[in-house]
Length: 73
Image 1 (cartoon, rainbow, N blue to C red):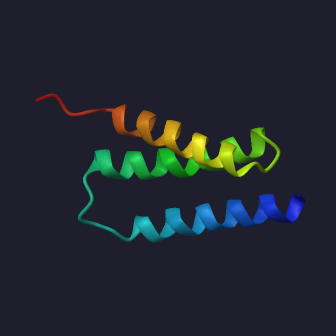
Image 2 (cartoon, helix red, strand yellow):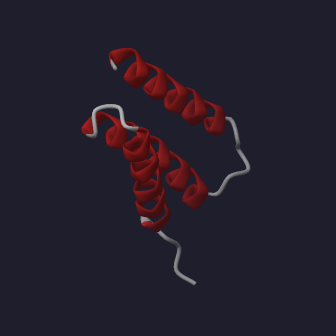
């Protein structure tokens, strides 16, 4: 169980660092990606390594990240 949590955390951290190289992303896109990564890790940890928790956390984190500092139109 512990190895699964570490593997998920490392995968999400790697994805986050990989997305950091995308300089053409808008600030809102970056916030969405960061929110999804943090939410995925938090969801996994809070549910004891559950895949469903990780995916649910990533979705919720992505939505919250998308809405933070949303530009006015």
